[in-house]
Length: 529
Picture 1 (cartoon, rainbow, N blue to C red):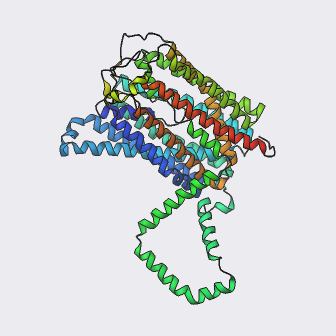
Picture 2 (cartoon, rainbow, N blue to C red):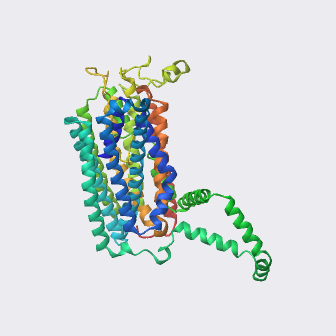
């Protein structure tokens, strides 16, 4: 509900303009990109129940407080705009974005803890049970991503934004209690969750690595030379070390430690055998071929109604559920690595329909609009070279900036307020091929995503499971940020075909990386997959 509603609330706050939504998207992507490794290291260093409870509490309380602030702003907006020459409004916007970002960071930590760590322990490291559990949890996610936006959207439509905020506030408080109780019960009935390996009870992987480096540095000298060194230089070196520490503020020491954690986390990620598979998954985030605000906005410019889009979203959800079923069947029949290869091939074949749509009748793509003579027109929706697209008279309401919580493109739909009505394109062939490709591709996409997810779960050692998955989240958001920038650079409907081609190239590159990983694995001695 929150992922759907926050983008709508931000648009309402700023007068039907996407500036706040864009800032929020950049803040969310940037914060996970920078802090992903630190979040993962925190998950590794602390007991499982404390991590889950703290993440859950921070996430839900942040959403609750943010909802209260939004209710106050919506209720007293005119009065707030008059205080401090309007600067109080800026403060409120900042508070909302910061709280929403904190909630997203806590959600990232909870996802790493539960879906990347707890689930592996709960299934007893049984690969068959793990595959079934991953598929089941993903089905729950998909159904929730359909029902939750519908629920909060109906409340906001039939009542008001204030009531919608209140509904989300109440739901978060209730769900906080329910989730807390359920997680505590799971932790009690699965004793393995309370027992981490002895070597990491008090140390994370990165802490142990730093300690090994220090010990290696201390043993560089031979024993006799080391004794002499201690005898003649210990006092001097100690005093110099104390002087250095006194000259450097504590905050800089902490900052250096955080930067060191980030650096070691990225090195740990690069060192993983499953590195190419994880990187390939991240590349799939750089795409406009999903049911986010960009694709739905483009469909509106091509004369597709909102009711039809809702129906298409439902069909795409069914296709996603079929992908989870395909994953479980293929894994049993072909093995996990081969499942990823088949899913990749299926995904790419379906996306050929999207590529075909770029050149099919009804496509608005016009490469001449990229000429320097039309540079002043970039960013608006009223170009002089439109063939089949329809200009929007409310250009400030373009859905350029995506707000996606995961690769599965939840229903974060921002619709055109001034969408063209009563107009029809010359042909519907292009838009039909586009959505046919997007919907059918979700079968392979979901199956591939589940494959890489399980590979990460099975391959990464428990001592670095958190930090590596944190870096994986950072990579996902980095590639999503590229998609974000890509759309800003080419915002007009005539550009959409170019964005489709670029998206397919990124997806092809991602699957190629997985093929390289699969080839490398198959060259090694066969193991049970």
